[in-house]
Every structure is written in C-alpha cells, then in structure tokens.
Image (tube, rainbow, N blue to C red):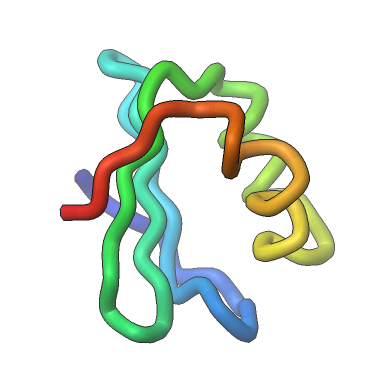
Length: 69
C-alpha cells in the first residue's frame, strides 16, 4: 500500500486501500498499524485534519479493528 507522508508529531505517513477499506498508518517510531473496514470519508478526514494524531484518537482508535504489522 502506498502511504503519503504527513506533517505530524507522531505520524510519519498514511495510506488507504479503497478495495479493502484498509487504513494504514506509519508512526514516527517505525511501527505500522492497519485499521480495517474504514470508510473512505474517514481517510479523507484524517488527511485533511489540522491534527492527524487528534483525528486518529477521536475517530479511529477504539472504533475500527486493527492489526500491528
């Protein structure tokens, strides 16, 4: 999955696969998490958020299944 670099104090890059509705987030500590069954509008939301970390905490964590890869 291709990820796009973002300017964040915690997140390095964010990617999204429309076919599987999978959101992939690479953190600055080099860990990568995939979040499953994420609607495209959530991906658009995190990419346009003033703070991707805050958006992640408020709208994604605890809502979608995830796996560390």
